[in-house]
Amino acid sequence: MSEFFIQAIGYVGLLFFLVSYQIRSNRVLFLFQLLGCIIFSVQMALLGAFSGSLSLLVNILRNVLLLKVDSWKWVKNKLTLAAVIALLGLITLYTWAGPMSLLPFASVAISSIGYWTNNAQKIRLSQLFASPCTLVYDILIGSWGGACTEAMTLMSIVVSIFRFGWANLGEEK
Image (tube, rainbow, N blue to C red):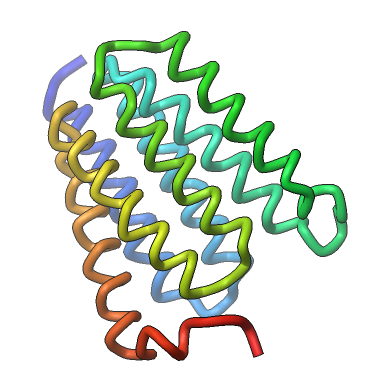
């Protein structure tokens, strides 16, 4: 498969993320981001980056679980979070390609811990640690659309912190 085609797949993923931020409906926003993650997962698999590819699938699973947190009460349990991280760990071991395989593991594990708090401040803080891991991984594997997406995500996190103020991102009111 040509390098151009593989990179084009990543830019399609980028497009899904850009469009998702312009959509008013949260459900459609999440759908577009889910599709973007699937597209990036395919691109990473084509690049031979299986740790990243399968970590994105765990990321999708985590997001689906968190979307159902109100109707599936067991999702709030820390054991569910531990199971997600354990699955991620098994995938990392199975797809081990050297130390860079730790980057997608760290990204999804750290962000999962943040998301499980349901606290905007802790979520942003987790993303400030997780997002650079993904950015570096995208650069190392040559996913230029992924790197652009992650750079924009990082900028968006920083803008939200300045926009709302760090103290105002605390507990939900």
